[in-house]
Image (cartoon, rainbow, N blue to C red; front, side, top):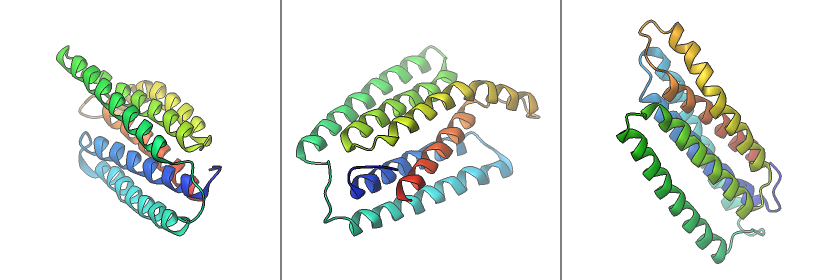
Length: 179
């Protein structure tokens, strides 16, 4: 993943691996049986990737970075606003019994987070990752519909489908950032 500074690409890898691991953990809550092994492997892979990113940050600590005090403050404000707005929207969806829309809402919010991160860190490949995440949000619905038809229980599959798709995309992007 191209970045002006090597340390910024490693920081992006840590963030992407963390988000990917959270998506795998989310999907694990909605999967039963042997299929749970996939998200477990995803979470473990995310931890390994984040640790690798941390080691890369330590190794490249003396190099330049786009991160300064102003960047950190702006990022914290943007992250806080985004988290609050996402929580309000998902709470409203849950109150109206529209929980099937929660994964797409959280995924869209996280995609916006990637755009903010791309701008602040100067890691422009994150724009492409955000675009791929948008495609995954749209594709999760038809994939989940087919999975529901194939499931013996007929259980809704939008939560695990969104989680697995987002986790794979983010973990792949994190690995790419470290390459």
